[in-house]
Image (cartoon, helix red, strand yellow):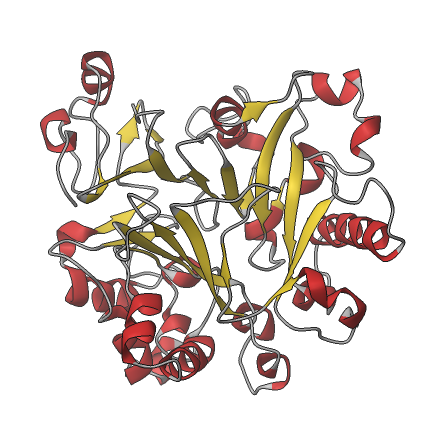
Length: 399
């Protein structure tokens, strides 16, 4: 059980997909992507973790009992990063949130991060719904509507424009190299986000997948005190970014100088891009592009501490196709951090045949495994797979 007074990062088990929740000590929440499968809700499939119910239990409710996340960051519009958005999150005028919406457990998004890159091409209804809601909010700002900064109407543009132009809204834009310290109209003293991408050049680059190359990539930064110059935890969230994106990220970040670039690229936790896909290391198919790119390997060398963690948000990794995940990619990560520090969301913690979220508490010693209550320890018992196969190995400790 995570300590509610600490900052935490939770990686949900959503098979080949992403859904992560950053919760700050003041209860501010940042949801990064979602992959809410209908078969995982209620009792439809007991072996799928009900991420919607867990999310509802993890976020706040306002004075009217409406559940909300402070910030929703959609890294890009692929289905496995926004599945369930339309059915599980409220869209429209927040003043019109109804009793029916509450009965349906719709979650209000107080502030959304919107990359114009997703406006290029829509391949699923959830992506289209996110775009529509973003355009509704942007229109409020264009019209200088009095409600534009109300909870449920807030929005931040991340990155550069593609075919659709938002130059008139530049004051609401954050670009690569920017550091964000204000979330849902509230300043944070000990938490910030460094934005690494997307870059406009990747819309026209000869990339195997432009949508993946233009994922929002960011570094979450945690300090103990406002006055501190060092971060106690740094976590990289890369969406489906590929080696093309990371080549640019490294080159552009290094232009800021050695000290600043190392600070921006360092990590204690690294969410493996594209569900442990080989595309982070080189083009696919892997059999035709067997050597990892030097820049991708270099990005992993910015790890900190004695046991930095790579999180693979994907199904169980096997050699056989289809992939991702790629076993060859896992081997590259393991070379950098060791087998005990490579954690797969599907196999890392199992309870009653159901994968459980991976949770980190952010402490002065860095990210830690949360201490389990006696009941929780007995519940997990020897059912865990991967490196966590007993309650005793899931106690406290610096990771």
